[in-house]
Amino acid sequence: MKQFVHFFIRSSVAAISTGTIGLISFFALNQIFLLSSVYALSGGAVVYFTMKSITAHQFLKQNKLTRKEYSYIKKNLEQASKKIKRLRKSLLNVRTVASIKQNLEILRVVNKIYSITKNEPRRFYLVEQFYYSHLDSMVEISEKYVFLVGQPKKNHEISTSLSETRSTMSSLAETVEKDLYDILEKDIDHLQFELDVAKLTIDKTNKR
View 1 (cartoon, rainbow, N blue to C red):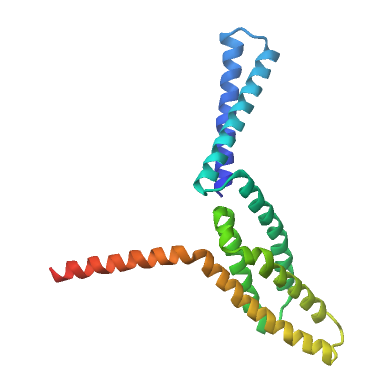
View 2 (cartoon, rainbow, N blue to C red):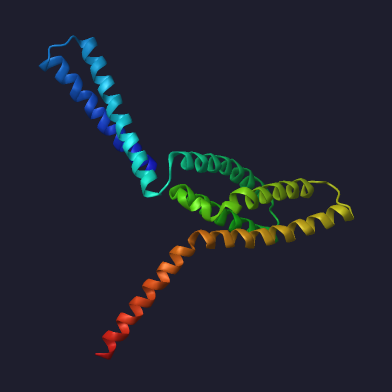
């Protein structure tokens, strides 16, 4: 959402700058229309990319990241986005009553981790195992589970594999919930501190 707002602001300012430069060049400086258009478009482009550069610099400064670090995190997030789409496709294809609730909860937690990291990329370092291992495991296991469920006939081995897979997915669901806690731990601690302060303030007020 923030990216769209920034893009909208940059585009609006660049469009206004393009129009202003074009009018000044054509009417005030008496330049021909073609040359005025070139000046206008060039000026608008300079304004747009200058604002984009400033916004990117502020974003990196706010998140305490270097360009190299952000580029690395962004690459991992792009890969994670593709994996989450695969995971969503697999989990939503499993329509057993016992699995629906768990699968929806897994997707909710996974999307929340991704969303937080995308908005605050510095937090990537708090959940590296999620991006390097846990997400990959969930994608691979869920896709194999869908494949086995789709078999017309299920022998003992397939049934056993399905049972083990469901158990493993339950364990992974708990693992990603822990990942979510890890990425939110500082916020939870800060909130608890604020609550403790508020309680002390209320107690002092009531004792007066």
